[in-house]
Image (tube, rainbow, N blue to C red; front, side, top):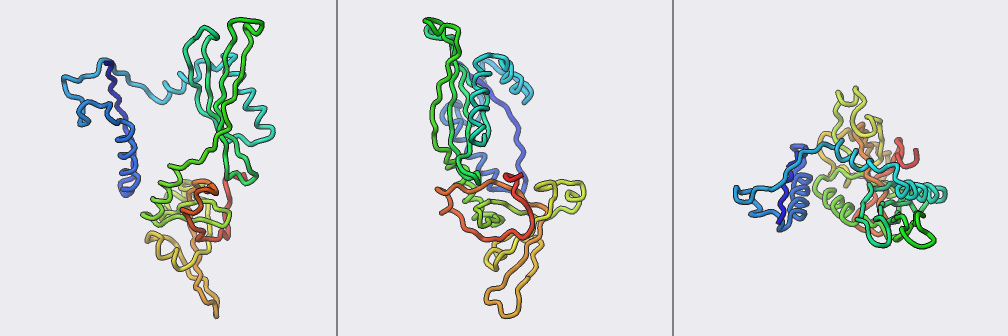
Amino acid sequence: MTRYKVEFEVAVPDDDQFKLDNFKSKIDRFLGDNVPGRSGWAATNAPLYTKQATFRDFIEEGQRDSADPRWQAILAWIDNMSLTKRNAGRGVAMYTKQSGAHKGSIFCKTSFYTDANMSTREVYLVEAYERTYGIDKGNITIQIHGPYEDSGDEYWIQLAEGDKQRGNAIITEDWTHRTVSKDDPEMVRLGGGGHGGAEFRFEIDKATVERLPKGLNVVEVSTPGQLEPKYLLVTHNCWYQGVIPRKHRHLFGINAEMVTGFNPRTL
């Protein structure tokens, strides 16, 4: 049995217990039963191979075959699809070993938005390989696997759970999900914070005000005779999480109207 030792360091805000617990849960699921003892590497289970690597190492390793004709064929297919659908991103290449039929495949996961407001995506697994026999010998063949639904189930489910605990979610009528935090004047002065410290104003109701964390800039803007009081939230620490897909909207609720601000996806 080959053993590997993996060491890494993560940074989690001290006051974000939800994020810390969520990260620890993911690590536990990832490790499963692969780690002897689960409590650390005992001397008798010392790894046979260790390697230290930086992000630069991974980037360079992923780009080492950027001139490979198989990879170029994949990029050409993505560019062609982008003429009619907006590309939502692509992953790094995955490689298979050589077989009798070809020299091995390169796979790339890529996704495209399927609607104008970019709330729904479809995923493709693009495969490219070079033929080693027959009249197609030497030619690059592209095979498309998909489209598959990109539901983002875990992302949105965990985001909804986090909203319940933190209470800082702002969801507008276009189902855009944002979170707000207390302003840091020094960070704003330096151009930091969400969207570079840009100012956002949201009209919210009393129930939303009561759920928001303390310390946010909220003022009442109700007019005489108005049945339900209205409040204005002004923030320079607003963060964008995306448009909630239709299949997950039952987990959330619209609670704000944006008075001033912008949507990053439309820029």
